[in-house]
Length: 387
Ligand SMILES: Cc1cc2nc3c(=O)[nH]c(=O)nc-3n(C[C@H](O)[C@H](O)[C@H](O)COP(=O)(O)OP(=O)(O)OC[C@H]3O[C@@H](n4cnc5c(N)ncnc54)[C@H](O)[C@@H]3O)c2cc1C
Image (spheres, rainbow, N blue to C red):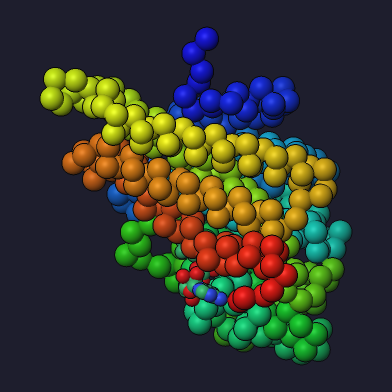
C-alpha cells in the first residue's frame, strides 16, 4: 500500500478521534478561508482581521483552557494540531492565535485572580477582546532579565513607564499583557490599550510575517489599578511560563509550513519537464524531496511525543527548546529548498515557499532565537550555563 508522502509514519493513526476531528476542522478552515486570500494579504502587508470571528467560533482561541471560561478545553496535542494546520496557511495566522491563546489568555488563567479570569477570558475566547504580549524591549530580546520597563506603586495604582518592541497584535489589541520591573521583581499587568499614555506604533517595511500586525509599544506614565496586576507570579518565571506554552505550539506550526512547501515542490517537480523528463525523475530532485519527507516525519514524531508529555504534565522547557530549534530549522530549510525546485516561479508569492521561507525567518528568531534554544539544550547536557 502506498504511504502518505506527508505522513510517512502514519502519525495520524496515533491521534485520538477527537484530535483527528480538530485537525480536520482546522484543515478545512485553512483550505477554504485562508489559502484563497493569504498570498494577497502578504503582498499587501495586511492581517486578515475578517477571519477573527470564524477563528473564535471554531474554538481556536485559548483552546486548551477550561470550558467554564468559554474555552474549548482541548488537550495539548489538539492545540498543536491547530497550530500546524493554521501555519500550513501562514505563520501570521498561527502567530495571531499563539499570542492570543498562550501569551495573553494563558497568563490571565495561570497568574490572574478569579475576577480577572471571568472578566477577560470569555470575551477573549470569543474574539471580542484581542491581546498582545509585551516582553521584548528595544535593547535586546534574548536577555529579558535586563528589563528597563518599570512599574511604581502609587496609592492604589501602578504607574508604568517603558517601551516594548516587536509586539505581535500590538495595533489590534484592546489589552496588553505588560511585563515590568517592580521593587518586588518582574510582574505582569493587564493594560488597556486606550489607557492615557499608552501608544502602539505599527512596524512597517517588514519582509517577513507581512500578514501579521507587529508593533512597538510605548508606556508613558500609564496608570492601572492594583486590580490589573497579575498577582500569582513574580519574577522572570512569569513571562517564561507563557513562552513555554507558546513555544510548544510553535514546534507544531512549522510542520504545517513545511508540508505546504514540500507538497508544492513535489507537485511542481512531477509536472515540470526538462531534458525530456519531469524533474521529479532526476536523482538530484528526488534526494531533495526524500530529505524533506524524512525531516517532516522526524518533526511530526518529536512534536507528538512532546504533546503527550505536556498532556501527562511532565514536559520540560529543554524539551520544548529542542523541538522548537529542530522543527523551525527543518521548515526553513525545506521552504528554501522548495523555492529552489520551483525555479524562477519560486520567487513570486503565486507560490507559497518564498512566503513561508520569509515568515520562518521571524519564527526562527521570535520566542527565543535558534541560538538561545541551542544554548538551553547545551546547558542541559553539560550542566554549564554558556549564556
Ligand atoms: C515578527 C516578530 C514578532 C514578535 N512578537 C513578539 C511579541 O508578541 N512579544 C514579544 O515580547 N516579543 C516579540 N518578538 C520579539 C522576539 O521575541 C525577539 O526578536 C527575540 O527574542 C530576539 O530578540 P532581539 O530581536 O532583540 O535580538 P537579540 O536578543 O538582540 O539577538 C541578536 C542576536 O544575538 C544572538 N544571541 C543572543 N544571546 C546570545 C548568546 N548568549 N550567545 C550567542 N548569541 C547570542 C541571537 O541569537 C541573535 O542572533 C517578535 C519578534 C518578531 C521578529
